Length: 106
Image 1 (tube, rainbow, N blue to C red):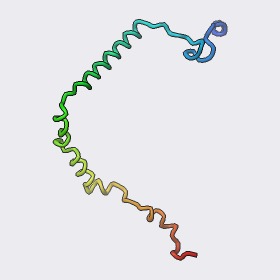
Image 2 (image 1 turned 180 degrees about the vertical axis):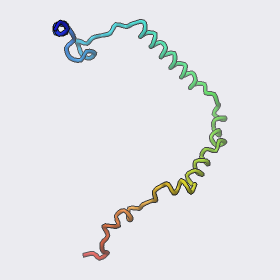
Image 3 (image 1 turned 60 degrees about the horizontal axis):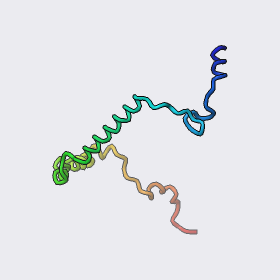
Image 4 (image 1 turned 60 degrees about the vertical axis):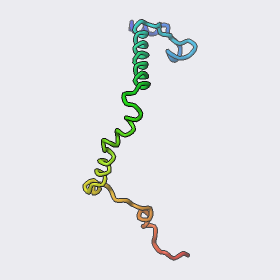
């Protein structure tokens, strides 16, 4: 009963707490400022790594070709065991073959 009375007479913001004209504005804390500063430092470090990549354009142009991943993927898809697991190709004519009763037009 006493908790109900406390909550009943508590002054609060009408509507949504953090939106609108009479919103509740949180005070800025040192922890929030520190978190924001760390986020900005992390973002700046990421931008530094993006501006100065590890490989040059000439070095990175052919590195995927040397690994041979595309040939390995093609060989895997062309493997007989993989092809038997896949469903066969079906055309629209095969799908709608049950609608073809007779060829003559009325």
